Amino acid sequence: MTPLNLFQLNISLITAVTATAADTAKQRVVHSQPSVVIATKQVELAVTKLGAHMSPVSFFRDTAKPVQPYYVSPWQAEKAAKMPVPVLVPLRGDFFCMPFGGNSDEVAGEKHPPHGEVSGDAWKVVGTKKTGDVTTLTLGIDTKVRKGRVTKELSLVDGQNVVYSRHTIAGFAGRVPLGHHATLAMPEKEGAVRIATSALRFGMTCPSLFSDPKNREYQALQPGAKWTDLAKVPAAWKDAPDADLSRLPGRYGHADLVQLANESWEKTGGPAWTTATFTDGGYVWFALKDPAVLRTTIFWMENHGRHGHPWNGRNNCLGLEDVTAFFADGLAASTKENALTKEGVETSVELSADKPTEVNYIQGVVKVPEGFENVKTLEFAPGEVTFVSTTGKRVAAPVRHEFLKTGKL
Image (cartoon, rainbow, N blue to C red):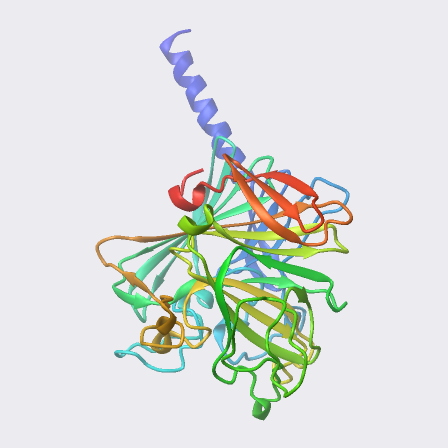
């Protein structure tokens, strides 16, 4: 082959790769929000330009029964109305938060919106690429309250029903709470979803008032209670039975918040994990993380418990939020001594202006057979995760969990 022909062949190959990557990314309006969409044969993923909220995501899209586990707020189909805070405008699915929480107090001259600018301001599409069997969408945002840049990479791997997320935080300095706000759509049938987690140090219900009756909001769990069993969480009322948070939804008409402190990777021998088994749907949604980066998991259980605008008593969703933060109290509470730091649990991350901070995260879906019931444990082998049920059933799925440590696929 002549050098010219070789050059033309290389150009053709480059063009083909670029076209393939471009074909996997489309921009369109999804549930009222301008969004970017990427896809493989197995997964289609949409992320909003406003706040970079990831939903809907269709897993197993190449089968007769695709799975869409993520929540989309019910007001998306309604005429646009003024929202109390920016994050509520696109509210859906999974999104990155920094500073995580309400951020009601100003700190050192900084006044952040709830869950930070990253959850409610516009992101720019940097581009898409396909390298081997990996398709990656990249977005970026430059923040103003505390100046810096956050880069979001969402990756899909051919043949897998998994989303790999990577956030690179550059230019920032100082401590901040941060994390993922994964939010699932919930069925109305009580107890239809079974929840399990990797080993916990302890759990705690929100010490402060989370749902204020003055605002037509109601909660069912005892504030500030500490516990070690997800199935035995103290209720707010005297002599009421303990709440079972392993079976959701529950306690109709209430909205509650709890936080779980994860055991370390070294102690458990693998990533920290949370699973939600949709028994009627025949699938498990899962999230994997490095607990040295995202130290806790917050459960936001919203079961028709808020009646102000825009909730109007109709909201039913489950936030399984992997964070380093103090509940949803924001920057001020998370960067000073609090009920969790007194227990040895860090609630903020130290950012350096000289060295970027990277947050790697994995979410996915695996289909399970009838009678699977709930997850008992996860077993990790190279490039694979096996989900072991409480009834002894086993389901293996390709997952490059090593990504949590390396950031590479």
